[in-house]
Amino acid sequence: MRLYKKALQLRQWFSNRKIRTKIMLVYLPLLLLPLLIVGYTANTIYSSAIISKSTQSFTQNSALTISRIDGMLRNTASAANMLALNLNRVLEEGRKSGQNELGRYNAINTQLSLALLVFPDVDSIVFIDAGGKVYGTHPELEHRSLSIQSQDAYRSVMKTNGVNFWLPMQRREYLTTDPDAALLTLGKKIINIQTGDSLGLLFLLIREEQLSEVLQKLNAEPSGRYFISDGQGKVISASDPQLLLTVIPEDEIRSWVSSTPQGASTRMIEGERSLLAASSFPELGWKLVSITPLQALTNGLEQLQWTLLAVAALCSLFALLGAGFLSKIIARPIVELARSMKGFQEGHLDVQLEVKSRDELGYFVLGFNQMRRRIKELLRNVMQEQKKKREVELALIQAQIKPHFLYNTLDVIYALSQMNRTREVQYTTKALADFYRAALSQGREVITLEEEIRIVRDYLAIQHVRYRDVFTYEIEISPECYQVPILKLTIQPLVENAIYHGLKEKEGGGHLHIRCDLNGDVIQIDVEDNGKGMPADQAERLLYPAAAPSPPAAGKGSSYGLRNVNDRIRLFFGPAYGLQIQSQPDSGTTVRISLPQAWNPVTEGNEPFDQADGRG
Image 1: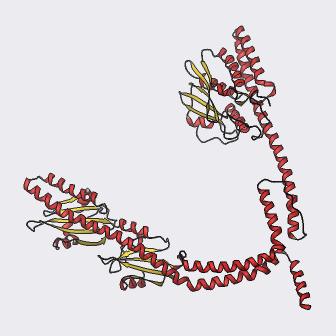
Image 2: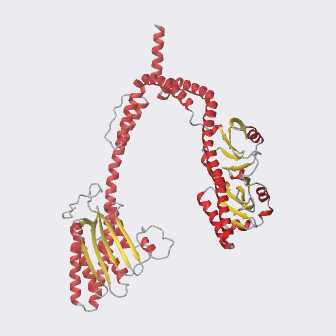
Image 3: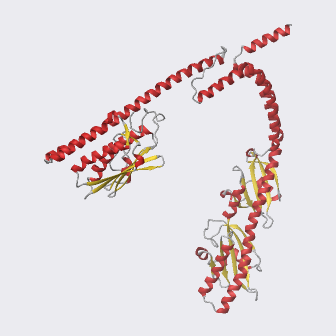
């Protein structure tokens, strides 16, 4: 009975703890046990698994690398053998036909160049005939090999009886186009097949970069070092250029490489435990060596993965038992809260959670409900303020454009009256009245393209009275475009800009062309003139915001009228629409208006609009 009471008291004490305390008390043992098991298991099998997998991988890759390099060496030897036969034939034919020196030079160089095409592993070829004449696949090779008879390489090959003789990897001033490049050279004495006399010496060159390129493909681990050494421990090719043609710096590595034909071992190298592996080349006595820090080799340990999987399964079992116990106390309210939060993120602001407790979760739910109500109220206020701001901006821009046209038109009427052109004053005044009657549009900001074109025609009629000899105009509108919605006074400022800044400054009569076409779901309206034009960089600056800093290039800044039209379109229809300007000096300017064919005022955040009559 006493134990039962103690158990009840302990349970009550646990229920009154904070959530963090409850989680720690239940899951702490479940976390410690897997960590101990994983640590012990990983420490036991880590080294053996890493060495086994890495050695196997190196063995497979090194076999491919050695095979590729051996193939390059065999191809070079095949090229030497082929050239020995071809040079015998070419020299004999030249001797019989009494070939001159130029013909002999061309025939031999042709054979050398053909060998490079057939055997791309060979970088370059040099042939020195019995008379000391040098033939090479590159003029620089011939120039640098003129005194080769005094070199050890020449004398060494000269002592052979026609077999292929490999010279060591080296940098030199002769038999090369670049003294800084390391070269592997195959020498061959060319012997007359019929008489046994020496015809000369042949040298085939392989650049070290071709070998190191193969090593780069082998170097799958960035922290590892890969190189090829000869029997004396000298590095003849390496993925690290600084090791090239140097003796292996570490005495322990050099000793191990010299005494180990093939295999792998773990050694302490530069204070770090590393995997040392080597494979032998079958012909030249070279060895391919790999030095890789064990710390870098952490993948591909299948045995460790299976062990960790078993440990994870065991831990999951304990976690499930603990979760079942905690679900009634913590998990279920958290799941409900998470589900409600997900709906809240998706935009469902009407979610209301029920407060069932007074612990941390209860206060959290209460705060969530208050936050939801506040956010919903703030969003409603923001939408209303944005809508009012949008309306004010459109009205302000429109108010700035309308007086601009009125002032210019009154200037026209004034100029006509000074010239006593009474009928034209009457005609212009009537056109102005018709223009403003159409432009006012009973207070509507959005009208149809048909109404906008009517405004443009009235405006052109006014301007043509004064500038009759300055320009002609043409308007082409596709029938499907007439009922497209457009902001009032969109085209007229562009026409005005074309007349005053393009056609008026052109020598001789100009032409203004207005056309509208449907391009997919976009209406394109072009206002094109053949007037003065402007440079491309100046045309780009015409639409710069008024507050933007002036670009460093010289020239005019932004255009007030064009910028206002562009801002109105973008504010009303969205940033995907607006103006585009193309211009060339003395060739004219084209301003393109892009508008949506199907415009939904509800989704755009504007008042409903009837496309049939343009009424808001």
